[in-house]
Amino acid sequence: MENDKHQTLTELTTEVETYFKSLSYTRTRIKFYQNGWKLIEQFMLKNSFEFFDAKVSDTFLGSVLLNRSYTELSRKDKDLIRCANVLSEYQATGSIKFRSIMKSYLFDGEIGNVILGYLSYRKSHGMSDDALNNNKLYLHRFMDFLNSNRVLSLSALDKQYILQFINGLGYYSKSTIHCMLSALRGFLKYLFENRYLDCNLTYLVPKSSYKKEAHLPTTYTKDEVSRLLNTVDRSNPKGKRDIAMMLLAARLGLRASDICGLKFENIHWETNTIHLTQRKTKEKIELPLLVEVGNVIIDYLKFGRPASELPYIFLRAGQPYDKLEEPTLHSIVSYYLRQAGIDNIDKKKHGPHALRHSLAGILLEKKTPLPVISEVLGHTNTESTKAYLSIDLDSLRQCSLEVMPLTSSLFQEVN
Image (cartoon, rainbow, N blue to C red; front, side, top):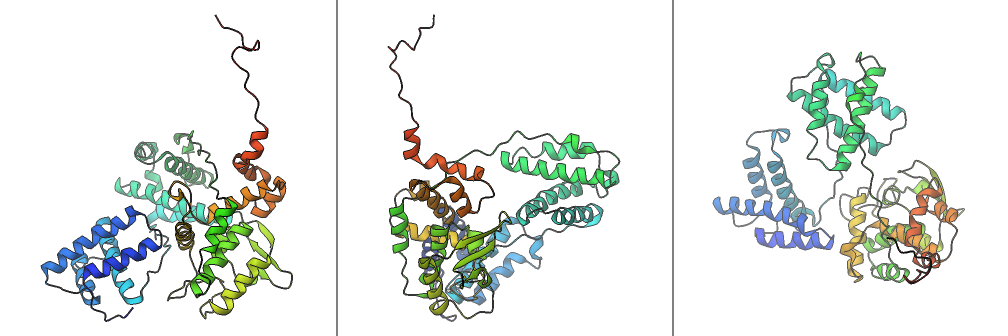
């Protein structure tokens, strides 16, 4: 798309909406942008701008910022800036770079520095990056609460503030409350054990009874997976990349994080195997590089992958050619599921993890032993794999018992 192309705002937003739909954006998410674009439209009408371009975008952004820094803006103003930037980026490049940005949290003062020390301590003791980032979020909320109450040192921290913070969590979901209480409990324990506090205040933090509800894994049939894979146009670079990634999920059961993080060093062509350390479990796995999978990866590397010094195999299809991120892979799988015309995908999971689940279901249909499936999926033990037994309907039917009629002598009337 040419940078100097004159477009009305309506023309541009129509193109962007079509682009979003091709990536399976939800109606709610598209509506979010539409609401922001209405305010941009009002701004353009008020200032007699006929076409949207970089100059109009800069002028609009200036009217939002009003000489403030980005961190001083309200959530609404930040959203408006995002809506304008999306239009400018699409107009300039013909695509939108999907960012997985970890919000930067500022920890300052005595309490902030101690929190940073705690997070460093947890990292050194093996806490995963995801858990660490969640703890960072929850403890930043706790620090903000203390700052708002002028509690700026640990010597001023007492049980009333901890109880007030806990009592204010009511509007969060049960799962979020559970995680926040856990993070707070761990931090308070650290403060006591490292003599920042003379009293162990963990007793103030209630034990949450929350238990994550079990859900049946989403699966697609062997025929549906075949229809999905056959939908991909393998004649262009994007299609060559997409089919390779989806086959890694559908045939080898790799998670999205491991597919996006796959490096050249992970593929051992001399032995036709894939060796990697799983991002989620930190466990090492070795998988066979199936001929079908190996061929599509070679096809992508030779005729589809942009020239890049990055060590990652899968890159974005448009500039800048960065490492592909997990949300984009989810959108890719969702898009092809819709293109394949598979029924009821809105009522089911429709990302790469569903292909992983589907592989487990297909293996169960073939009477593959549970330990073998566990090894294929990279589970640390078979307990995680047992969840898939609930989708093996044929085997479950064989376990069913005939229900005796009510007239049977086995039933006794209760007076």
